[in-house]
Length: 65
Image (tube, rainbow, N blue to C red; front, side, top):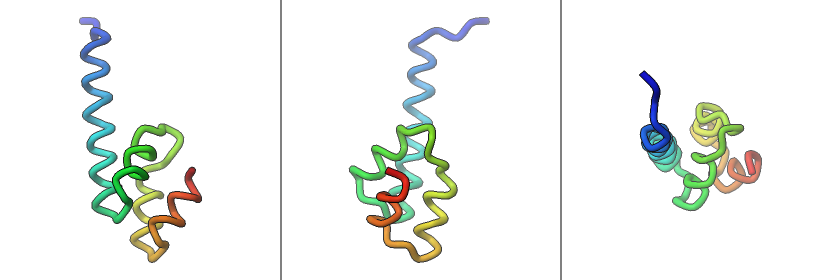
């Protein structure tokens, strides 16, 4: 069974929303979380762990941006 383009975009949106929520919980502001969540080159776990280890979210964002 083939996945339609609409289904693929819906699934991508869910993943992006999930990533954004994880980044927000870690301490990133809405704009930074939204941008980082959409970027497939950003490792979510590294972005979250960096803030949890004490790096200010603003600095962590600049590292990944």
